[in-house]
Length: 110
Image 1 (cartoon, one colour):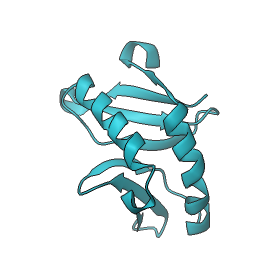
Image 2 (image 1 turned 90 degrees about the horizontal axis):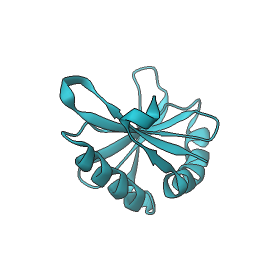
Image 3 (image 1 turned 45 degrees about the vertical axis):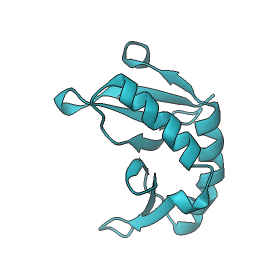
Image 4 (image 1 turned 60 degrees about the horizontal axis):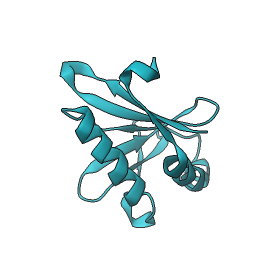
């Protein structure tokens, strides 16, 4: 089963990390002031991921494709992919992983 880890970030913030069953990092959430805000962001990204229009593709300076999920603001950012085809093929499994993932809290994620 995939998991969503809530992690402490710099400056006392929290962010979430979606990992696949095999431990591959798939998405990282934007930083939030509290665990409760991070939980709200997880629920928001789960809802947003249901609609293709909430995915925006980008390229790094090294021309590696990645995507963000959001609706007016970025809620989560994907890892980079080898090609745009790989990116597009990853969206359906990421949707499933988001829907099924167990949330682990800071003391459980270690």
